[in-house]
Amino acid sequence: MVQIVSRYWSDFIHGIDPYIPGEQPSNPAVVKLNTNENPYGPSPKSLKAMLDSVDNDLRLYPCPESSALKSTIAQYYGLSSDQIFVGNGSDEVLSHVFNGLFRKEQPVFFPDITYSFYPVFCKLYDISYQQIALAEDFSLELEDYYRPNGGIIFPNPNSPTGRFLDLNHIENLLRDTTNSVVVIDEAYIDFGGASCIALIPKYDNLLVIHTLSKSRSLAGLRIGYAMGSSSLIKGLDRIKNSFNSYPLSKVQVSAAVASFKDGTYFKNTIQKVVSSRQALTHELKILGFEVVPSMANFLFVSHPGVSASDLFERLREKDILVRHFDRPKIDSFLRITVGNDHQNRALIELLGEIVEPT
Image 1 (tube, helix red, strand yellow):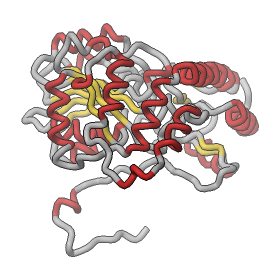
Image 2 (cartoon, rainbow, N blue to C red):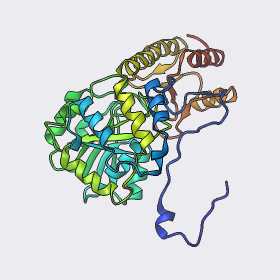
Image 3 (spheres, rainbow, N blue to C red):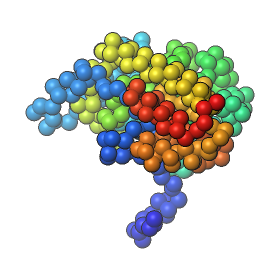
Image 4 (cartoon, rainbow, N blue to C red):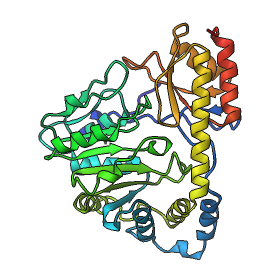
């Protein structure tokens, strides 16, 4: 690949290492199990709300505070609107978090195996950081976080492993960490496990990040939000209003509000994904795969007889996309998004042809 540079770039640009997102193929025939999208579409009420919002009022700027969405989220979780921050996807929300809350003298802590954009943000904002090693079984060992730091962040469930950390362990960490912010990135929490939202009234340094991309099937709209003390949210507002005062469009807000109000559809699709996760786990184990316990909408798997890189390529040849990370400690694993019944069956049938059942 030809590397493009320009003499007009600032020195800063040469030093950053941009994040590479998961592949988004244009071929609709591809079985896409690589970026953890929901296999089921958005709520029909969300789709209708979007259509209804496309009118002559699009000539106007949207509400800069996204007040309708903030109040909806606050009511849904039993919080107040001044405890909610919304942004153009959880990645943007997290970018503001790193920029506004982690630029301290001491390093920010996060796991060595987690989202690869955490160190990208650190380099972008010149933040010192330390990656804390996971245990051999990929669980978080929070004992290593009990020391002075400039902030702590980790996903729960973690990605790409899918492992979940019980709430009592996180609360113990919060009791000990009083001089920095603890951020729990809960992109996949709706697929299993208890959220840390219940701890927000007790700890003013806790910030919880959510997205509508996964459990609510709105990845294409880019909507994320943070929940925490009003003082933390006010800090994020100051960053946002120094960057983009109008991050969410009228269409985005309309779809998001409708999604929160369609509880029946939400619960049904979650149950479908969870049931499929359990069935897929069982079938993969029959084929001899090691499957890391997951509370997300994906599985982290390896096979003793076939390398992950070989499995990745052979699946790709047949238009089935999964994710392989060519990184130390996890290069023998694949991350597989839980698909619908048709997608999961296609995956299992092809894997059965590649590996010998045990």
